[in-house]
Length: 312
Ligand code: NCD
Image 1 (tube, rainbow, N blue to C red):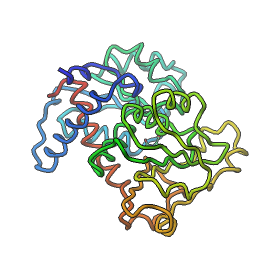
Image 2 (cartoon, protein in one colour; image 1 turned 30 degrees about the horizontal axis):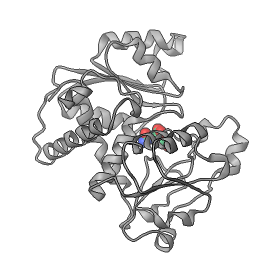
Image 3 (cartoon, rainbow, N blue to C red; image 1 turned 90 degrees about the vertical axis):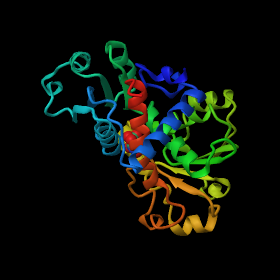
Image 4 (tube, rainbow, N blue to C red; image 1 turned 180 degrees about the vertical axis):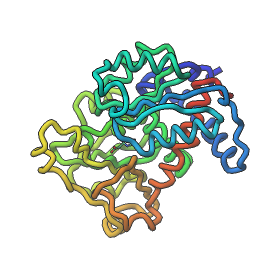
């Protein structure tokens, strides 16, 4: 019954779903992982075409969606960046979406403007999956972050999360906080410079929905965390680059820092790409879980495409 919740749905905002829906997605992702491992993926989407409309740069989100689609037997069409499309000739966003909608069975969209995915979902008849809109939402990343957490710790409830870095402009942070309101984490520690604190409307929403939040500036606050979620300072979203200059390089998570302050069992997640906030010397430690996180993007997005397009 609950599988039907995903069928033909837009995936724009985590809050359009609930805990049960997310658990359905996770068990489907487990099934996809098994099929991948056994090299026995059922080509259930072999008659489908997925449109990948990436108006903003992307490596993981686009390529994991594309891989997911192809593993399930679907075809993909699309672009990354506006050059080479008619947007460069002045075509409106609405017209571009209408065209893609008439060609494909589902649209994965990334755009620099907040609300772009919602707008597109109102125009398109086919399902629109938000691959990130401005600083607002990145629902499939949040599902992936929690799926990785569940894979590592077997549970999400009862864990302490530390979210570090650009809590103001990072869309992965807002979507993750929204998703966490469906669960019962012990505490969510928000570590950022003053200028990059979580936006007030999201903070209030989280509090109203039962999340226990603690705001900190010092990186030592990671000491209670099970999940240490590091983010890149989102340079491209600062209205004033001088403001970026003041906060760039605020935190640098290194092997030494983790060995000094973190729990031995803690795991570091990062949506990637990293710049200088997460040093490569963490890569070969037991804390590192961001490469697993990136790789789980394929089964998680296979599950999502399969549920949305009715692949069973
Ligand atoms: C993130 C994004 O695009 O918001 N990347 C991703 O999808 N994995 C994070 C970022 O760009 O910092």
